[in-house]
Image (cartoon, rainbow, N blue to C red; front, side):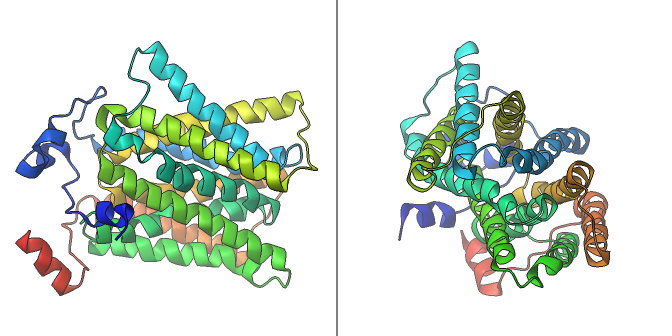
Length: 349
């Protein structure tokens, strides 16, 4: 069994730091200092902070679409992630915090760099080159669907009836949004869909791993260096496959690159993982259903993309999923949908 599998299958802890401290086996990690506080966030504060994450993520796809006319996708992604990672290192230096994570976390820099950066951002940048920016935003942000399942399997989070309903509404909405592209006969659309879904899957796996690791005060340094390492791998791949393509350095491209690196990478990545340490992954991920909706509206405003009847229905279902999750999921007691044998084993732990 690989170290990754061992880490994910280890006994999960409760989502709140106060509850984690009650488990004697985790007393050392529960006492680990947290520079930004480990208290449970109110629903209002959580929603406002997630709005920052959502807007930062949603604006990425239209900007990527414009930037792809000026730079090859992998090289573009590498510049964005390396610059974003170095920005976080600079923040750590200004705050006089430790620049390198502790040894137990440093060994995860490469695996997280591959998952959260090389695969996630590489496919994210390549996707809009083959499909519309709006559809890429939808498929690339199906993370809630994947995170909820992974969190139930590997973090011990329960899937309540309301969470399951929101999940089904979101899945139905994403399916309707993707259906027109699936009907296309050209292979490029299908390839673009695979790339966008690959971005969502790798990002979801990285989120579950990061929550399980609980890096505490080393969170920012772990994020920073996995961005730098993953971006460097993207740059190496770019040198192999994009030799004949160059970057057109214009004011527009530099502006797009800075927005993507600072807001779309450094800020959104750190804030998402910070919130993930303080809330249940499955419930927090439901907010991400708003990303493709805002991404679609941004693409419509920027490129004149239009929605058909099926895609409009998909947007309606996604909005229903978000509203349902906001008003139902947070108040309904969790009901487990895990197999009885799995529940019995966890009760014995």
